[in-house]
View 1 (cartoon, rainbow, N blue to C red):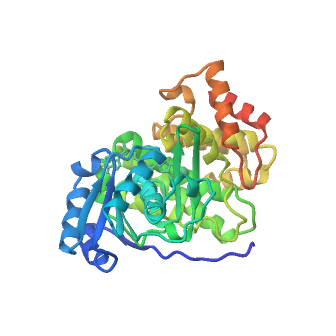
View 2 (cartoon, rainbow, N blue to C red):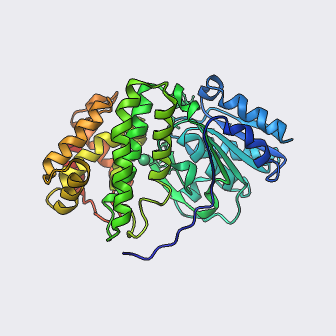
View 3 (cartoon, rainbow, N blue to C red):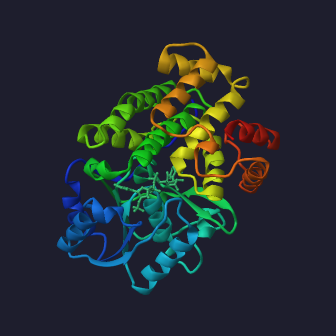
Length: 381
Ligand code: NZQ
Ligand code: ZN
């Protein structure tokens, strides 16, 4: 087992109507909040109204920045930070999915400085200060609500990067599963895929951490049991709650302790697809993970066999991959790039390879060569 530190200071408020407590949490943190959200879903599902009411009740003034897009871009982070600076806000409140909360993490560390948030994202600069951040989550998927990582892209540089720092932990995260009832069918499925992918990235990380492996299997089993049920019954609060809790646990440190790190090669492949063709994050992963496992099958057979034993009671790597594909397909999440609104054919292949090269796509535990990239792209097209 590798050495590790457990540090997770996020206060998570989980359940029905928890946002009514947000004002009390916000009052000691500041007087004027930059309220960040996306393209309008939060105004239709009650999350916006409840958050604004709670902030007003807590005596907090509000400045709004909306329009954060899915697969968020650094230009919006910088615009929001500039607004926050000019309005002298002293707190950031994010209402939305991973794209909004990730943007808000960079906004909260960018307001105190005079350079682009991109320098933090690519690791050229480290934050030394952050405005306190409160997150109201409306989509179960990324785990950003309980971690210190944020992912953002630069279309100009064709890069999508994730970076993290302890200053990027939200102070409070409010998780009311009721808000996720309005998530459309496709994003509900992508969220389940994403949480399973986070658990799998942990599984394929190096290190002898058997208890962590058991946590990982439990999280995947939960998603396999309740994800398909949720697809059939999307208004069901209990199912929404189970998936939301599983997504939070899949990327808050629990699936990495005692390992060198997770692998994260598959996420790199997915990010290349997202920056190039704006493919939703979870969809990119149901395409990339089977391709990655097929590539690694001869290199790490014992990991795949153990996964199959843990999930399906079978000792066959090929059959394990097939069953995971079957699971993703049962959610209607894509298995090939051609299932999405994206170009295919030789030119598209070369374009994707170029973006993978620019992003230096590889894993922390299992390196990917340029030849591997070709095999992966062939298998995903
Ligand atoms: O923009 P709005 O109108 O809010 O619509 C969003 C968006 O179109 C909509 N939505 C969100 N909540 C909703 C809802 N629609 C109806 N009802 C609701 N309750 O859903 C769409 C997708 O939202 P988005 O935030 O993009 O999805 P997700 O939560 O999957 O976040 C994806 C981003 O997170 C990053 C991904 O790379 C991607 O950029 N990730 C962040 C991680 C982290 N910080 O730890 C780890 C992950 O691996 C991931 O990379
Ligand atoms: Zn992910």
